[in-house]
Length: 248
Length: 138
Image (cartoon, rainbow over all chains, first blue to last red; front, side):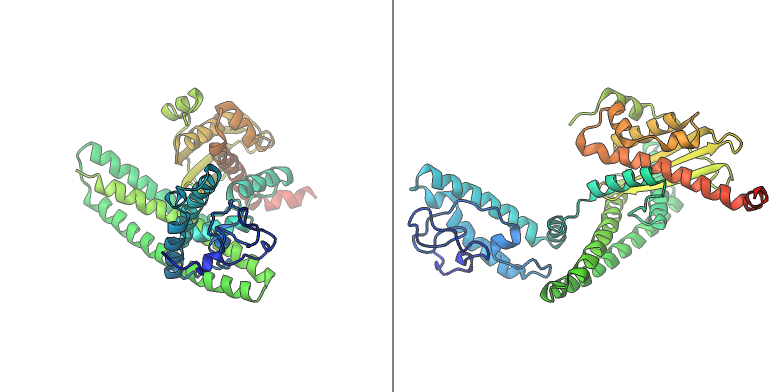
């Protein structure tokens, strides 16, 4: 059994007033560090759940360690002797723990989650921009750059052709070669975007350290842009792979 | 989630699929995309320069059934309308007509964006080809 002095029993900022429902004296987040009882879940973000700062370069080894330690102690079986209420909290905390871990361990999901915390609502913002364009008569700025859209469109046409040929049992080596080239360029594009995103993570973390709100917003918007493009490129690579693999 | 009958109808029998000459002066092209789902939508209009009436519209969309239905419906709706009338089309009207569920509202937004982008492209061409006429009117 892990020591009760694990990092997860630390008190979170803003929670200094919460006391253990059972022994009433200790302050706790997941469980009481005095009597060990599971505490009712409090609405915290996933970073705070693990006691991490809202930074993007995350120590995944520490995250994993913390996850296992918490899993053992929050698991509903651990409170099998407990009353119904504590067991319920235990279940809720465990499912929160799993969601938080799954989200934070994946760097892309972690970034997307952080952006949501930072008020980025892609769909809602796109809808608002359209409403604004309708009202003002100005053109809406598209989130995906036109040249990338053009490339996507062309490649989609080629993929459609490839599928049609496949259905007829035909094979066009020239088309395959072209699609293969496009795929390679997409993969390079994808890698470049990932590198860009990684440098954003470090810039973000620095901005958090320096409490530079202006810089933070700038990087936030840049990450949204990079993620949007990456989404597109990734989906297309997937489509290309599917179209190529399903060939007879 | 299941598609409405109207979405299925447009999906199975899309209206006005095709393309027009992008470089033609009376053709406006709108190419838009939704990164959330990876959809790409191209909508083209052919406008009568005298009357500003949209005489023809074509589309080609790579995306889900709702995106295809939204753009198919958009081409149906803009045909015969003036530029100004077409600019008044709201995505919420597409949502209503196709009974799109909340998770597919972005498809209707994309279709409205495509109409606007196509009209914007046409207007830009008009301005570029008619600088002399505009000045002469002053």
